[in-house]
View 1 (cartoon, helix red, strand yellow):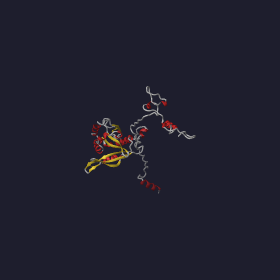
View 2 (cartoon, rainbow, N blue to C red):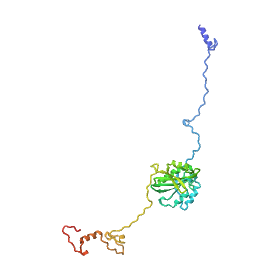
View 3 (cartoon, rainbow, N blue to C red):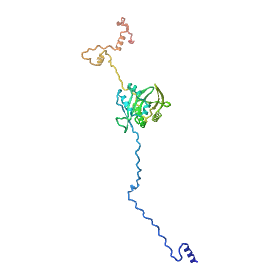
View 4 (cartoon, rainbow, N blue to C red):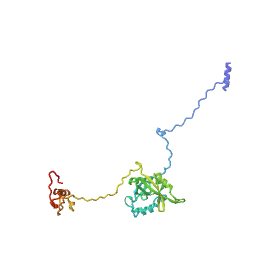
Length: 313
């Protein structure tokens, strides 16, 4: 029975009866992996640099402002030469030469202020990138009036307006800045440039009022002075020049003698000049009259004798 069981087991395993049992197959050997290239640990741990991207888009640089070196007679030619390069959209919305020329006659604190705007990396010192014209105006309050602001590239307007605002709030004792956006004739009548209006609103300007002028209409925008450090401190409102004049007279002297002093104070008279006798002081004259009495000999009356203990007056 035992023999038959062994043969049945051999038949199930696929081996013939009486054959030697097979040896187990050797384990499969994997091919050797190639050795990694020797490299320092720091180099293996360093991340790979991303591929080089293209140059970033150019951002507008900061603006600097400098006075326009021109006279009242030559500023017109300088202005016409500049506006040939300026953005037409801004020129049509803000004040042009026809509105600036009559204001050239104003003098003093309310005179026009002309400033060039130059951008870092701009066209160069001989070709300014913008122009700003403003003035101080006094009404119920003191405010700055921004009459003209133009640039050679409209994409720089945001930074240019911020530079002009800081300049005006630093130099002028003003509580706000106002500017007028003039309407233009369009298909539906007089219209304001919504694009330029939006640029001013981005820098804190808000609608203030409408302005009507002969043959045109404008919208006044206002930006109020805020608190520091966002806004520069307000400078004091002081006059530019103060003149004072006066005369000094020495008490007890008359005429030209007062210019050289009096003898009572120990001053020496002018050489070769005889000074008149000083006039008696008001107190001395009054005391002398009291001692004489109202009816004294000086007045043609009889001298009265005061009784004992009575005052002299």
